[in-house]
Length: 45
Image (cartoon, rainbow, N blue to C red; front, side):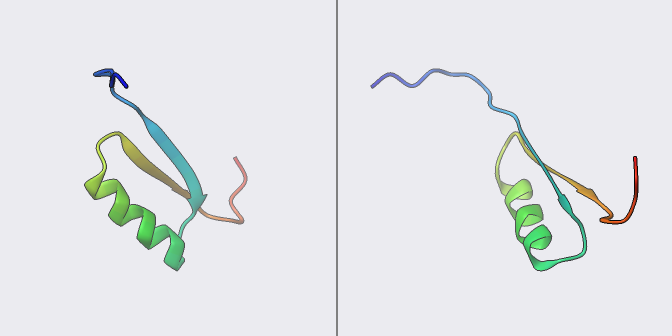
C-alpha cells in the first residue's frame, strides 16, 4: 500500500459548550488539519 503525501483538512461544525466540543478541541490541538467550528445552537446565520 502506497501512502501519498497529501494534506487532509477536516472541519467539524458542532454546538459549543458541551463535553463533546471539549474533546474535539483537544483533537484539534493534536491532529494537523483538524479544525472544530463551534456555534451557538440558537444563533441563526
